[in-house]
Amino acid sequence: MVYLETITKDNWLKAISLRVREDQVGFVASNAVSLAQLNFLENFHAKGIYLDEEMIGFALYGMDEEDNEYWIYRMMIDQKHQGKGYGVKAIQLIIDDIKTMKEEHHQTITLSYEPVNQHAKYVYEKLGFQDVEGLINEGEQVMRFTF
Image (cartoon, rainbow, N blue to C red; front, side, top):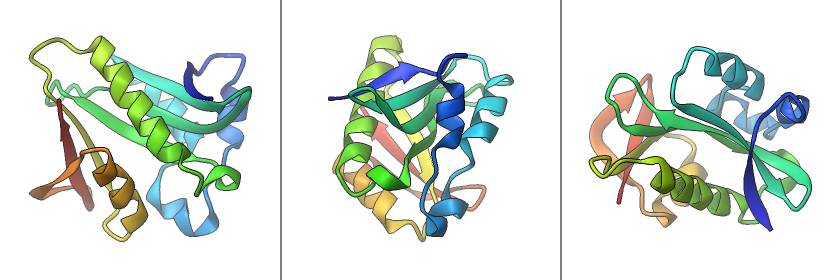
């Protein structure tokens, strides 16, 4: 069973030990950077993605202070567990978690991806995210999910 669990003092070391494949390193910030960034983000959540008792991935998401909408800043699956559908399951769990937190006026979840990372685009599209035409964030294509 795949589920999300909050990153705490008990599991943060496991979170920073997770790695993407070498060819994916440029696509996502390290989990250590994400956990450091969490100190400066209000209304954000760092979650471990678990398969049974093993942490297999990491996500950072919450309400962006610039536009007051929900964003998925980071999502990664460890290289040993990629290609097994866990990324799709994790994004669905994140969507479901945001649904429980959001207020009625929040109608979207936004994320961005490196344009050369077509696999990420495929995963996000599979779950209903759509490219926002002409919207680039720090060189990354922006996608949006609408409730």
